[in-house]
Image (cartoon, rainbow, N blue to C red):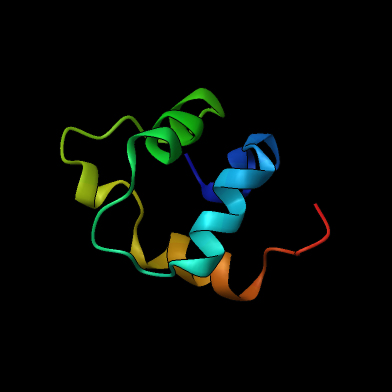
Length: 66
């Protein structure tokens, strides 16, 4: 599922972590859970939960006024 379809449903704390840790190699469990609960990917490999396009979205398209 594309990030824009679940981004609005992620809690603010997780969004802030993602913005502050762009392209992190590993995501903390609470952030992984927030992504899954919002309808995002359920990865087998936690390091691969977000694609390069997802990170690009977080960096350039997401707004800080959520």
